[in-house]
Length: 221
Image 1 (cartoon, rainbow, N blue to C red):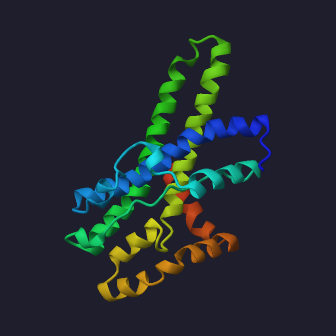
Image 2 (image 1 turned 120 degrees about the vertical axis):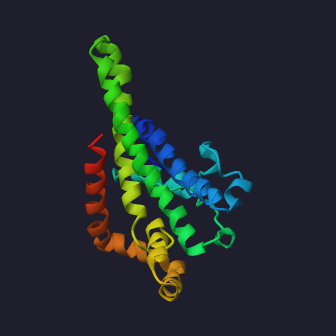
Protein backbone atom coordinates (compact mmCIF):
# COMPACT_ATOMS: atom_id res chain seq x y z
CA UNK A 1 0.00 0.00 0.00
CA UNK A 2 1.34 3.42 -0.98
CA UNK A 3 2.04 5.93 1.77
CA UNK A 4 0.25 9.08 0.64
CA UNK A 5 1.26 12.14 2.64
CA UNK A 6 -0.53 15.47 2.30
CA UNK A 7 2.25 16.77 0.04
CA UNK A 8 2.04 13.66 -2.13
CA UNK A 9 -1.72 14.02 -2.51
CA UNK A 10 -1.26 17.69 -3.43
CA UNK A 11 1.34 16.73 -6.05
CA UNK A 12 -1.04 14.09 -7.41
CA UNK A 13 -3.85 16.64 -7.75
CA UNK A 14 -1.49 18.97 -9.62
CA UNK A 15 0.06 16.29 -11.84
CA UNK A 16 -2.97 14.14 -12.74
CA UNK A 17 -4.96 16.51 -15.03
CA UNK A 18 -2.05 17.59 -17.27
CA UNK A 19 -0.71 14.02 -17.43
CA UNK A 20 -4.12 12.65 -18.45
CA UNK A 21 -4.47 15.42 -21.04
CA UNK A 22 -0.98 14.79 -22.42
CA UNK A 23 -1.39 11.05 -22.93
CA UNK A 24 -5.02 11.38 -24.13
CA UNK A 25 -4.16 13.85 -26.88
CA UNK A 26 -1.05 11.85 -27.75
CA UNK A 27 -3.08 8.71 -28.49
CA UNK A 28 -5.99 10.65 -29.99
CA UNK A 29 -3.60 12.29 -32.46
CA UNK A 30 -2.31 8.90 -33.62
CA UNK A 31 -5.83 7.68 -34.30
CA UNK A 32 -7.05 10.95 -35.82
CA UNK A 33 -4.23 11.15 -38.37
CA UNK A 34 -4.49 7.43 -39.13
CA UNK A 35 -8.20 7.89 -39.82
CA UNK A 36 -7.47 10.82 -42.14
CA UNK A 37 -4.95 8.63 -44.01
CA UNK A 38 -7.46 5.84 -44.54
CA UNK A 39 -7.37 3.64 -41.42
CA UNK A 40 -10.64 3.87 -39.41
CA UNK A 41 -9.61 1.24 -36.82
CA UNK A 42 -9.26 3.68 -33.91
CA UNK A 43 -12.53 5.38 -34.86
CA UNK A 44 -14.42 2.07 -34.97
CA UNK A 45 -13.05 1.16 -31.53
CA UNK A 46 -14.18 4.44 -29.96
CA UNK A 47 -10.67 5.82 -29.48
CA UNK A 48 -11.18 9.11 -31.33
CA UNK A 49 -12.35 10.86 -28.17
CA UNK A 50 -10.97 13.35 -25.67
CA UNK A 51 -12.53 11.27 -22.87
CA UNK A 52 -9.45 9.98 -20.99
CA UNK A 53 -11.37 6.90 -19.78
CA UNK A 54 -11.15 5.47 -23.30
CA UNK A 55 -7.35 5.74 -23.24
CA UNK A 56 -6.50 4.77 -19.64
CA UNK A 57 -4.10 1.88 -19.17
CA UNK A 58 -4.31 0.50 -15.60
CA UNK A 59 -0.55 0.15 -15.26
CA UNK A 60 0.78 3.03 -17.36
CA UNK A 61 -1.87 5.61 -16.44
CA UNK A 62 -2.61 4.73 -12.82
CA UNK A 63 -0.21 2.36 -11.05
CA UNK A 64 3.12 3.54 -12.47
CA UNK A 65 2.52 7.29 -11.92
CA UNK A 66 1.37 6.60 -8.33
CA UNK A 67 4.47 4.54 -7.59
CA UNK A 68 6.75 7.18 -9.12
CA UNK A 69 5.00 9.90 -7.13
CA UNK A 70 5.20 7.97 -3.85
CA UNK A 71 8.91 7.26 -4.35
CA UNK A 72 9.75 10.84 -5.27
CA UNK A 73 10.74 9.97 -8.85
CA UNK A 74 9.71 12.15 -11.83
CA UNK A 75 6.09 11.42 -12.70
CA UNK A 76 5.15 10.25 -16.18
CA UNK A 77 2.93 7.61 -17.70
CA UNK A 78 1.39 6.22 -20.84
CA UNK A 79 -2.02 5.33 -22.22
CA UNK A 80 -3.31 2.31 -24.13
CA UNK A 81 -1.81 2.42 -27.62
CA UNK A 82 -4.33 3.37 -30.27
CA UNK A 83 -4.84 0.44 -32.67
CA UNK A 84 -3.64 1.16 -36.20
CA UNK A 85 -3.85 -1.22 -39.16
CA UNK A 86 -1.21 -0.23 -41.75
CA UNK A 87 -2.93 -2.45 -44.33
CA UNK A 88 -5.59 0.27 -44.67
CA UNK A 89 -3.04 2.88 -45.74
CA UNK A 90 -2.31 3.61 -49.40
CA UNK A 91 1.39 3.86 -48.51
CA UNK A 92 1.74 1.77 -45.30
CA UNK A 93 5.37 2.66 -44.49
CA UNK A 94 5.02 6.39 -45.10
CA UNK A 95 1.58 6.80 -43.55
CA UNK A 96 2.52 4.73 -40.48
CA UNK A 97 5.45 7.10 -39.92
CA UNK A 98 3.18 10.14 -40.24
CA UNK A 99 0.63 8.64 -37.82
CA UNK A 100 3.42 7.84 -35.34
CA UNK A 101 4.86 11.37 -35.55
CA UNK A 102 1.45 12.85 -34.72
CA UNK A 103 1.69 11.76 -31.08
CA UNK A 104 4.93 13.57 -30.12
CA UNK A 105 3.87 16.55 -32.25
CA UNK A 106 0.64 16.82 -30.24
CA UNK A 107 2.70 16.94 -27.03
CA UNK A 108 4.89 19.74 -28.40
CA UNK A 109 1.75 21.69 -29.38
CA UNK A 110 0.25 21.13 -25.90
CA UNK A 111 3.48 22.43 -24.34
CA UNK A 112 3.27 25.56 -26.52
CA UNK A 113 -0.41 26.07 -25.62
CA UNK A 114 0.49 25.65 -21.94
CA UNK A 115 3.15 28.35 -22.23
CA UNK A 116 0.65 30.72 -23.86
CA UNK A 117 -1.96 29.94 -21.21
CA UNK A 118 0.58 30.55 -18.45
CA UNK A 119 1.34 33.99 -19.90
CA UNK A 120 -2.37 34.80 -20.06
CA UNK A 121 -2.76 33.71 -16.43
CA UNK A 122 -0.07 36.13 -15.31
CA UNK A 123 -1.95 39.17 -16.61
CA UNK A 124 -4.77 39.38 -14.01
CA UNK A 125 -2.87 37.98 -11.00
CA UNK A 126 -1.83 41.40 -9.71
CA UNK A 127 -5.50 42.45 -9.68
CA UNK A 128 -6.58 39.61 -7.40
CA UNK A 129 -6.51 39.53 -3.60
CA UNK A 130 -3.46 37.73 -2.20
CA UNK A 131 -5.52 34.92 -0.62
CA UNK A 132 -7.12 34.06 -3.97
CA UNK A 133 -3.75 34.10 -5.65
CA UNK A 134 -2.38 31.64 -3.10
CA UNK A 135 -5.43 29.35 -3.06
CA UNK A 136 -6.24 29.21 -6.78
CA UNK A 137 -3.64 30.82 -8.99
CA UNK A 138 -0.61 29.11 -7.43
CA UNK A 139 -1.94 25.51 -7.89
CA UNK A 140 -3.09 26.37 -11.42
CA UNK A 141 0.33 27.80 -12.22
CA UNK A 142 2.05 24.67 -10.94
CA UNK A 143 -0.35 22.55 -13.00
CA UNK A 144 0.43 24.45 -16.19
CA UNK A 145 4.18 24.32 -15.52
CA UNK A 146 3.90 20.54 -15.04
CA UNK A 147 1.95 20.38 -18.31
CA UNK A 148 4.82 22.07 -20.13
CA UNK A 149 7.40 19.72 -18.62
CA UNK A 150 5.49 16.46 -19.05
CA UNK A 151 4.56 17.21 -22.66
CA UNK A 152 8.16 18.06 -23.55
CA UNK A 153 9.38 14.89 -21.85
CA UNK A 154 6.76 12.67 -23.51
CA UNK A 155 7.54 14.12 -26.94
CA UNK A 156 11.28 13.55 -26.49
CA UNK A 157 10.98 10.10 -24.90
CA UNK A 158 8.57 8.77 -27.51
CA UNK A 159 10.94 9.81 -30.29
CA UNK A 160 13.59 7.31 -29.17
CA UNK A 161 14.13 5.47 -32.49
CA UNK A 162 13.23 2.01 -31.20
CA UNK A 163 9.92 0.43 -32.26
CA UNK A 164 7.24 0.27 -30.95
CA UNK A 165 7.98 3.80 -29.71
CA UNK A 166 6.89 6.50 -32.14
CA UNK A 167 10.46 7.40 -33.01
CA UNK A 168 11.12 3.84 -34.12
CA UNK A 169 8.17 3.90 -36.49
CA UNK A 170 9.16 7.31 -37.84
CA UNK A 171 12.71 6.02 -38.37
CA UNK A 172 11.39 2.97 -40.23
CA UNK A 173 9.48 5.32 -42.52
CA UNK A 174 12.76 6.87 -43.72
CA UNK A 175 14.50 3.54 -44.40
CA UNK A 176 14.46 1.69 -47.73
CA UNK A 177 11.93 -1.15 -47.76
CA UNK A 178 14.41 -3.97 -47.14
CA UNK A 179 16.12 -2.18 -44.25
CA UNK A 180 12.74 -1.05 -42.88
CA UNK A 181 11.47 -4.64 -42.80
CA UNK A 182 14.66 -5.81 -41.08
CA UNK A 183 14.58 -3.03 -38.47
CA UNK A 184 10.88 -3.62 -37.75
CA UNK A 185 11.71 -7.14 -36.59
CA UNK A 186 13.13 -5.79 -33.34
CA UNK A 187 9.68 -4.47 -32.31
CA UNK A 188 8.77 -7.52 -30.14
CA UNK A 189 11.91 -6.79 -28.10
CA UNK A 190 11.55 -3.01 -28.27
CA UNK A 191 10.42 -2.38 -24.71
CA UNK A 192 13.19 -4.58 -23.32
CA UNK A 193 15.71 -2.59 -25.38
CA UNK A 194 14.21 0.72 -24.20
CA UNK A 195 14.31 -0.41 -20.56
CA UNK A 196 17.95 -1.41 -21.00
CA UNK A 197 18.71 2.02 -22.50
CA UNK A 198 16.99 3.71 -19.54
CA UNK A 199 18.72 1.68 -16.82
CA UNK A 200 22.14 2.11 -18.43
CA UNK A 201 21.58 5.85 -18.88
CA UNK A 202 22.08 5.64 -22.63
CA UNK A 203 18.53 6.86 -23.31
CA UNK A 204 19.40 10.17 -21.66
CA UNK A 205 21.93 10.94 -24.39
CA UNK A 206 19.01 11.05 -26.81
CA UNK A 207 16.12 12.24 -24.66
CA UNK A 208 17.74 15.17 -22.84
CA UNK A 209 19.17 16.98 -25.90
CA UNK A 210 15.85 16.57 -27.70
CA UNK A 211 13.95 17.78 -24.62
CA UNK A 212 16.28 20.80 -24.44
CA UNK A 213 15.55 21.51 -28.11
CA UNK A 214 11.79 21.33 -27.52
CA UNK A 215 12.17 23.55 -24.43
CA UNK A 216 14.01 26.16 -26.50
CA UNK A 217 11.30 25.92 -29.16
CA UNK A 218 8.52 26.35 -26.62
CA UNK A 219 10.25 29.40 -25.08
CA UNK A 220 9.89 31.20 -28.42
CA UNK A 221 6.14 31.56 -27.79
